[in-house]
Length: 273
Image (cartoon, rainbow, N blue to C red; front, side, top):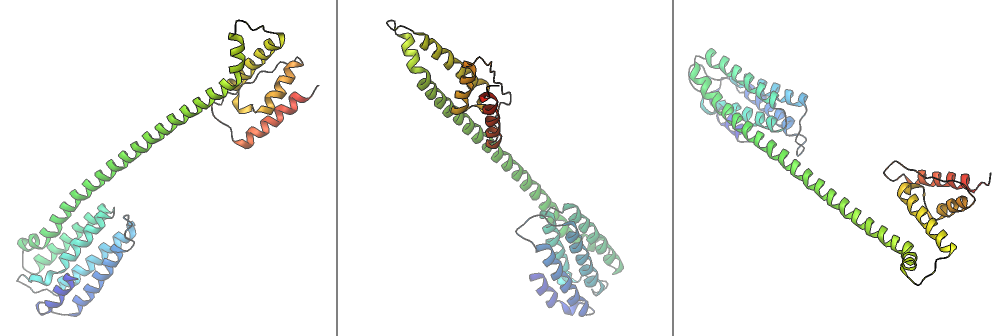
């Protein structure tokens, strides 16, 4: 807004008013294109190029009506607009287009300075501000991108650490649950085996063998076992069928697949044939 006010207050410095008003319209359109879509950071390449083209039109229109042979003062308000919008492009991930815009702006300023009998000092004067601020903005933008990358890496490391802790805790809980179930299954039988006064019967020995097979099956093929399938497996073994369960997946199956496998196993073992 301030740059537009400067343009209005220096209309007495230009040879014609309408190019300045048209240039301000182009600058307003360029500002809208550069700012549209915020707070999202990325800007499309096409819109960034559109902003540069509009800024070039603004620059050429203003320069076409500036006085010849003397420095126009604040009538060069367009340089501030170009500086601000090119920095916006830089921060919106269009650094290449922004620096291309700087080169185009310097070339246009050089043409204006020499064609209006001002020479190289005028080129330096009109280009120094935009170029300097672009360099500062480039350094700040690089620092911010580096900071963002470090923040992302730190957050990812924390998430991985939390995940590892959660998995470790889950394994501990599952181990405690498995040990609790194991004590429930084998505790009474182990106590009987440890009793020096107890007399083991054939039924006790058969129960020990069956329990050992159940535990082995649970370690080898947990995906295939439920309470019902274990009973069917033991019934088949009691008929003399040799049953060996192996599951090399190392991970749990989807429940629908597990149910289908258990049903097929029950049908195969329940068939006397």
